[in-house]
Image (cartoon, rainbow over all chains, first blue to last red; front, side, top):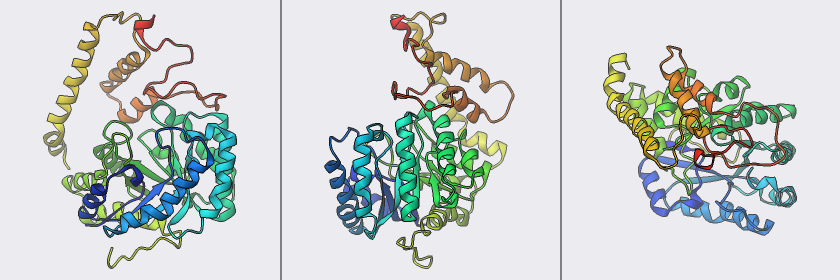
Length: 271
Length: 100
């Protein structure tokens, strides 16, 4: 059974992870630009990171038959520095036509500040100007509910953005309804200690249905599991969901959202 | 998955998690500097509120636990403040009873 992991930070993962993901049926990943665990000191650091995402990482994935796509942005945590954010946003257009760049992401909020919100609005405008998909990061822990609602309002203020071309990630039980009701796609991140466990993600699927819902590992340098999507697939099967439903949620749903960018290749016959 | 199947599949796992929580509170009781409950750490106090709603007979417990732990304000802030800890703490609240 094949699947797509629509949110994983492979720059932080080993080659062995690519091998294990390929063996588990992963056919494609999409990698949003994110916080490296430390604040970068200059726009040049982001330039090099964007080169890594658009040049080096796709070749590393291809060695295991996995197609690698990415999203570019300045992440919400470093967006508190508005001067840095302005310079980084200016770098992005030169990379947007690279063959694996799907859109702008993961933009959003971290601590729900005015600066973060201003930079979020600038990057929503950037996606609008270039007609790109958007991938959104919602804040951690106690900041998630407030931040998700602020993000939804910010996107809706730009009336040219079609919610069906935006995936709002890291939803949990207290935010998923607001995201889906506003017409966005919702991503459930499967983490061992925070966000959703595979069990809770399947609970959410059983509560809200599988329309416009996807699951991802968001595997990175922190506690995370690059095989968490296969774990959630097993959880679905164990509960009696059909293989067709499992494939719908973990392969066809992400392919439908991502396929709105014509660079995304998906062959239902072979994938 | 039926009710009985769900109990069979998940009871042992959640029994273990419940005992983990009980042991956590025992650990806090033994810890030097403990002044609970009058000066409970705000995170621990939030956890106690969450535990109370688990057995209130109302549905949507996961959503309500998450809401109980969430920042209830709605306006963006001027500064980032402290990193997220898992339970909303109003500004200028002591973060640990060891510091009170």
